[in-house]
Image (cartoon, rainbow, N blue to C red; front, side, top):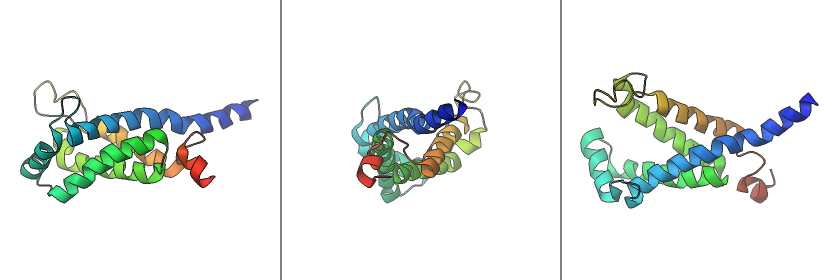
Length: 148
């Protein structure tokens, strides 16, 4: 009986991680790509990344593709490991370039207006790495296409 519970959680766990991670990155990618959800859109994102972070436009474009495309891929379970790798890469760069200077906690510096620490970004990175290792699970498009 206990074994059946573990098999169920192995099948459900990737889905439980895929849905929120995919939605978060689909939304963030939509902000940068289309200006949705209060985002600045493509042109302003290029300018901000280059001026404030020193990230060239080609890498900004790759980050936007990783966020929007990776979010869609993770959400649907299509090329899950590749999609998750893109997200993990973006989070690693975000930790290094933006959040590390603000410490660990997300909200401690937010009150002072200095920015967010690595707490949330690290959690997203961990979720993406889990999907890179485990794959999309039982209920994903990858399983239908690749018969995995």
